[in-house]
Image (cartoon, rainbow, N blue to C red; front, side):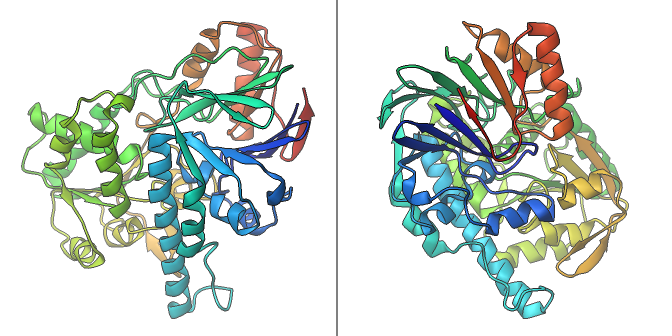
Length: 452
């Protein structure tokens, strides 16, 4: 069996792993590269394989850095099945359609305003490309074995977002477990990840491999920020991933109100049409999260859902707080949150809460590192508001969580490969595993192929 590390090697984004066993070729994840320009440009390059030769894709979860290149794969000739859990199939449909729409709108806006270096600016893919991809999805349940050529596969809960899974892939001779993105044991909504399935090799994420999360809870961070804007009559702006992060934020804000820890009258605006659709799936799949049927609908009933661009603009025109705005995208790379940033970041009485990982090369990472202005829509915006960074909201396991997950393994693997991490994070985790577990562990290079 060969494993090709074609993405998320030496970086967090672009997850893409090619498994080749005799005549069977499958791809585990097919994500977009995000962050630095040189990484984003990889999305426009040809795949380092012929998509027509791939029999199937196994998708661990719906986030764009794992699913976002699927329409490109289909556009280049892939005709096989895309296997994933049932919630992941529905979430990915929502996410890909939204991504295509944003790309089309951004290209149109860039052409209208004339700030693109390309003439004309084009979307990476279109809604039509996504529509051709969706019929290829084959939803499965957790723990349900399925065959692809001469390989047997099975999903296990990863606890990261709704439907997220690790996957075991086995031939007659060798087996490999892909962790996917692993969640936290104390996530407000998601259950803890299941232990790794018994296998010869483990390909594991290392996003937070160099540190542990803050001991201050996400709920406490929210409480402090909200009480501050209640006093200053400011705006709390929270850039958020529309899948997973946004739902956790809305749940914890609602819990703070119900417990009397923050003023109940402060309005909460959820400005993500995609996020509204995602919230519906929490009701559809209660077996995949901690709440019971109907409980998440009660949370959403206490939130103002912004439905269109006109309502979004009205939020920006009304500078008076206190109010809370949760809007995509989580790293300030696109979407309606950029217009809110333009409206509220210049005012010192407002707060920008960076609720999670900010990939290098994104506006979120630039602000995290102290930038006093950022460029968006062809202009520079001053960042005079208070910036509160916190990893307490992360849906990823930290270093202790990752080591703890490995310790739950019912076996000692022959080798561990660390992916989906910046070089420092991956190498720190490598040394930690070597020191504490004495297991063979390495960090693959981009496009490296390893024979097992």
